[in-house]
Length: 120
Image (spheres, rainbow, N blue to C red):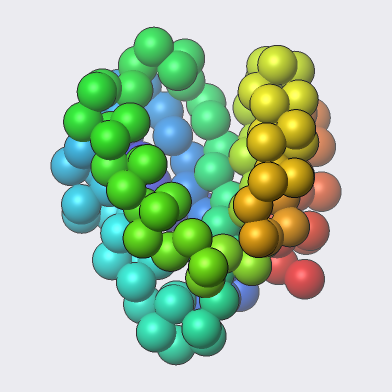
């Protein structure tokens, strides 16, 4: 399930992933918010807090995630991923170097720092 994280600036698309994540989570929750932010601000600040195992992402969710990334490739301003897995933080930090956006991985203990960073 994907839920929007409240209390952040309107230029931020911030989400919390829990339990099973499906393609429908992207269709009904993530995509409309990202689309609105891109239209309103031209650039997107995106934060995803992963509070579930990556095994809980359906194949459809992985496909929708990839399509979202490609669709807005030049529109990402900041991308942040928060996880309890150090390997996800390291993966985000490494592959973020190849993206046009500023990208940063965070561990779960630094979630509040990530929220401040994505809001700047």
